[in-house]
Length: 198
Image (cartoon, rainbow, N blue to C red):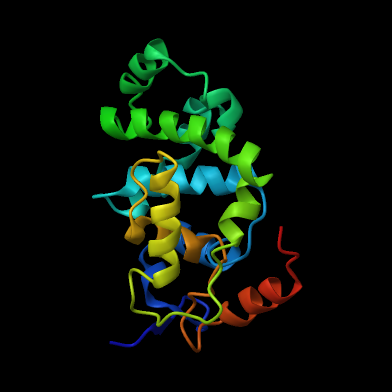
């Protein structure tokens, strides 16, 4: 299967992004571009957790609802969420209402606060697992995603399996997952080259 297909403008892109205009926008402006913001990194880990068993299209369509429901993914605020918040979130039709996932991301917010105390920032910790070489386009896990998953689980994080973590690493620019020939691959590579590691 070809890894790229021509988009509406005739430019080749990773084939997965051509399903909807929202996907293409996300692919062209976010996916694979390096991120150092603790809040954005935490948000993506949360959203990848919610995506488990669902499509990214579902999560992307609800992203603003998730942000509103989860205090903008400020993990310092989310760490204080309690039973009333869980009930509020389970009643929120704008997000994915899954008790296990809701409780997991609240737990992960508490663990993120601990990780900042340990490592200085979530970004510094996560970027310590940046692969030295690019994994093949078709893989869904890597040695680095497995290692980061284990490191997070060891610290009490939930819903952070190696496949979830690999998708997170691709999205946040720890690897350039854009296919060879994709029009956005070079832009992501340049952004990674200019990026100051935390």
